[in-house]
Image 1: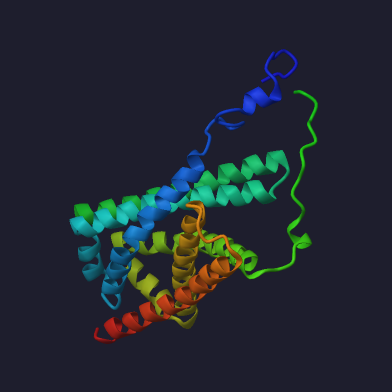
Image 2: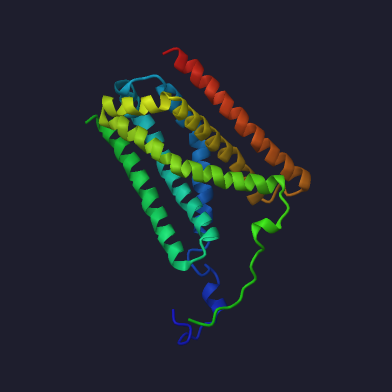
Length: 130
Length: 132
């Protein structure tokens, strides 16, 4: 990306999909995951309310049932993806030091993937009844 | 690298007069950040359920405590407020609701609906939980 050797103007480089070359994909996925959660929120709340006061055996039985596990998996994927995008926007807005910004964006990705995989693993384990 | 081009920057947030929509925009981000951290609680709960009775009892001891209940109440509000507040952005994305009275109404609506839904969920929670 050496500007001196490139014949392309700065404007040409940011045209169409912009400087990040991904265009509005984050904007679109932010809305996509938001709609997904708006649709899933009622069943998710019903599941959580159903679990109030139940012990681990009862909770494990409900959480491991196929439709509930699928609803929760969809919600986990949508929410962790949504929060990854949202936090990145906040980082890009307020962390101006380039290296600190890269470190924060990277940490954000690690955190969101770790939370998603830990939660998904737990649900799959409950589903398989191990 | 080419010489840095001095692009126009938007003024700092402190330059602006505080308005309702601006305050709620900050609240939208704040509730988002709170839930970001709160997912740790959700993950802990799911992992505990998958781990066994002792781990799950630890979660229940926490969620049953005063601090735990306060956090869960705050979490419920953050979630439901962010949800209804986020719906305003869909209206705006589609190009509607930009008139002063419309955006004020949408924002008041989100604020009130978020609180009302939170209270409703907790009434249901106590009604359900009381039976067990």
